[in-house]
Image (cartoon, rainbow, N blue to C red; front, side, top):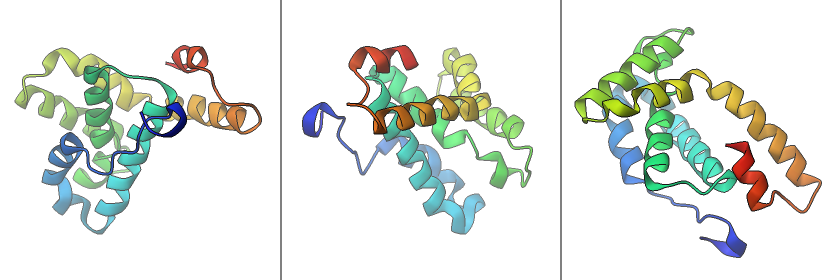
Length: 138
């Protein structure tokens, strides 16, 4: 935990770096921005809810692939190719049991964002979310 019970900001997440690195060429000049976007998402999820190690790994993997189809398949309809590439990664890393959950995270990540933004607005005008509130968001 970081300051005042908040999760610490981790400036280097090896799983994130290893998972995203093979896509650096495809993502091109957008790579630093997308990488930082994933870091923000992972840290934000950690701030909302204390996660198990497996939940954190799933969040990181889903984060790496959630928008990837924009670059890998050069399409605005990026969710299907992003999900397909995540499935391939999970198969290659013997993580197939996580496929359905990772697919849901990717396919619904904008819906999750709506809930998170609501909680940010709420916490700005209150003492902040309690641990029971954070658990209920998940």
